[in-house]
Image (cartoon, rainbow, N blue to C red; front, top):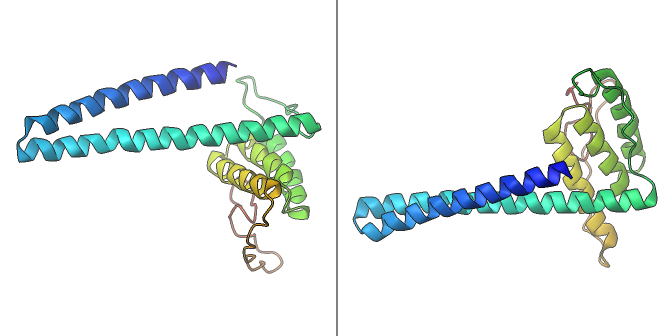
Length: 180
């Protein structure tokens, strides 16, 4: 609940900021000189980009939360029982061990959104947020295609790595959070 409140307060502050910046852009355009009109248009681009970014992030969070709720209803939500440091962070060795398990589950069932969701949680626990986000996007996409009546177009699989070499780092081929 605390995260939701923080998110809504942050979003409200951003929307207010976008309004202020946008109003300044309109004021510059109304001034009417070529320089102020140019600056006004440039200033208006910032709130447009910000609103788009806020909207995309809100959609992502809503979809990820919907997956979490569905997985929780099925009893498949990962349990948060990893040991923590005194500061509250998850211990790196424990996160790496869970990550290895989740990666193997995902490799065994690459078309199951549930395994990708749990892998995204493992990436987040291992403090690899960019990969966690990409993997969660993959889980969302797989969930969508599993719910639709039309089959999703198949994507060509990446070439496999020779034995002893690490797999390529992509959402389709999970790699270790440390990149090794």
